[in-house]
Length: 113
Length: 117
Image 1 (cartoon, rainbow over the protein chains, first blue to last red):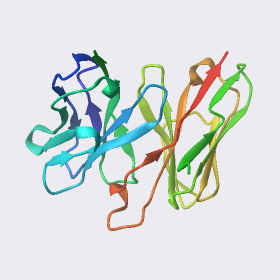
Image 2: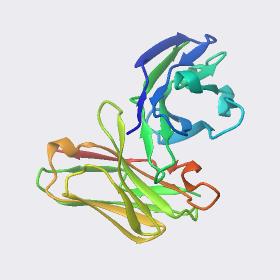
Image 3: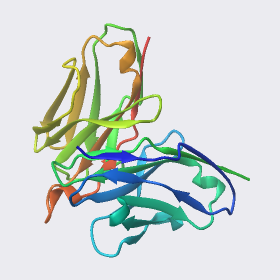
């Protein structure tokens, strides 16, 4: 069975700092990868997704992620965070069977002014 | 227009009670899901229905019974509620139409915060 690891549980950054959140998955076959964001008190929203093609994926709100197959990683990046980026970020993987999404444990990002 | 809606948003109840949470989507999707998010924010799938048929049933106590009256609705009934059932329950939907069904994005509802006292 696939699993997803997010090693950063809580990240605190000042506004304008650069962000990189780690995501590693364990599955040897073809994967589809997602990053979701959950703002305080809200539902999950898709930030970006990777299915195939260019391993550098650009999403909404200036976020991007790079799929590195050899490292089983799909790290999320943003060059300059804003206070409004304070949220919980979830990496998820789908291995193509029955549309099941497996989520990582989430990373809480806190951006200070 | 709300894409995936859930009712109620908050549910506070006593141990031992039976309760239901409703989910509706107006996206024309044919696959719906229930996820449980615990107090540590960990999200785990519980069930998935495709065209009203159960396709994913993770290790969930049989006190939890999903029901899909049609493709646009997936309700969750919970019997004999326990303290450990306290969590936020998210409904989601996706479309299996297309070249590879599992590629499609899941759209999440706003969640139902269940508190069992």
